[in-house]
Length: 405
Image (cartoon, rainbow, N blue to C red):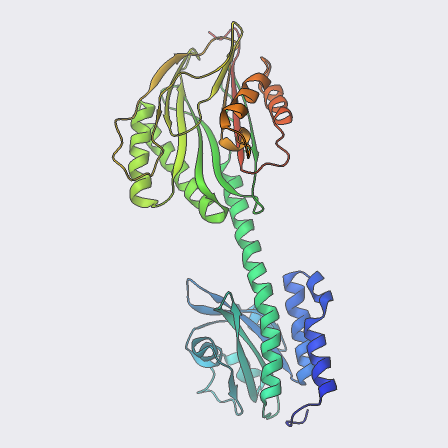
């Protein structure tokens, strides 16, 4: 291709090829491949490559390539500031090398392929460098301003896709993390039936709500439900750390209030800003007793054969992570009657825009049947319009079965 300025028709063809709306229907990997094919054709170059920035390592990673596929297969990395691509990322400006030599590039694959001239431009996402897009020729080439403009246009498209890719990876990681932390199956405990539900209330599909049930060496059963403020990967990560910490404290504390006191110190010191509500209950080996401490969380509902549904009569202390020196946390010791059903939940189950939360709690109390726990969960979820939640929903139902010795 001639090095002079291109005419208007050719410029329009180039722009249309890069901004074609059909590209939006491709997934990210296919989009990268298609853009590299088009830029090779439009610029008449032999190689094209996309390197995306690994923020934590401050390295550019070969992600897609045409004519330099080995670069991707080998997972080539180069530090920002080093070599050709590293200089593009560091300066945030286009870089041209008309005569490639070993002292100007650090990627041996470029030399082995016989690339003679290179043009690279930064890829931006949200105003920050997200990577580098470069093209090369096997014969000497003098790239001009029109070539730079086109490559920058392609880089803009790559940046949009890279941002979508990062969001997708974050969401996949968060989903995988949350699924690994929510029990796939609740423990089998003689004399107790248990069932749970979790519904994400955010487009990411991930939040900070969680529930947990575990048996302790003493024979008591630990029951936890909680809500870390926020949504997405960060909340899921914090939730995972808090969940693990509470499990550890449960092994060394016989009192739920003591365990939550230790957890509060951990949240304040290591999880700054992660305001968390939680309740921790312990059910005795014979199933007859519940010991519970509540840190800013909604009180569970208890339904029993000889009494109407009611909130468990326990004190509610400050949430975890407020940073304030709270009064001593309190535990309540309560009876768990035969045939009774205990329902723990997060606020997404009962809170609705435009009404006081007490109205939602009253609906929950009215909806809980004295029935097996799977029926309890199904009935409650159907009665409280949980298919279009505004917030995450976690619910845990525990029934003390008749005849336990």
